Length: 301
Image 1: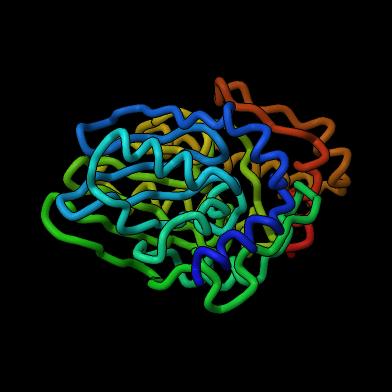
Image 2: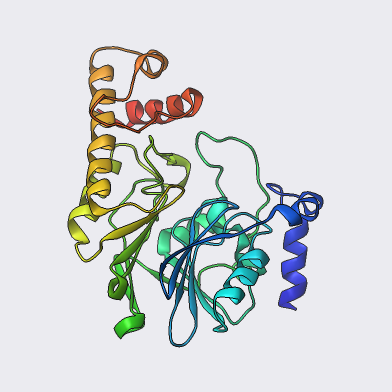
């Protein structure tokens, strides 16, 4: 019965149609980066996924775009004979959760409590536009988180231990920070996507005003890691995360000053440049950035 529901849901996928998926199968290549013998970054098809091979099974972080579930299953099968037993979703966005529906009923899904609610709501991503099929429109829909947390959650023990943290609103209202303590590695999801002005998705609980404080809480609160898997960029370091908190904080300060000075959101975006001290960063598309600046203007007193 679950397989029938899963296939029915796939027919509804709007972001990548069934025809599109079929025509691109040959291009659906999951690229791997080995961080440790039992931890891999899986790239392609959306956000960066991670496969943590434990003694009992594989913990997979994020499942990419629709149609990428099976390529993930196939690639992980090349890395280990252990079954995939758990999937952690870092947040609600389609390029991190849509593959959920392709995994078997034996897999346990875990996410922040807000992410469960937002997956059900299927709100559009602020600044991106476009409509996408609702993959999780039923309470018992395949792929919805079955275990949730509010502040912290520990899964497993010893070398297999995984820690989940929530530090507040940033990219969305349910960003989970996933730590593998034995390996001193963290998956930050899109709260730390790459060196860029992030998506601040107010439609899904994100906040440009809260974002810098959330990043600082994560940077200062998680001290047992040396490497950080980003949402879409390369693996970075705690120093990079601290700098990213400074970058988003500087962006917010500039927006705050512009509003106080009577500058419109459109004029601010067209004139704003990345400060020279943040080498390698970019501002992203102006039309998207204007939506986030306007949201910050509206939220500030």
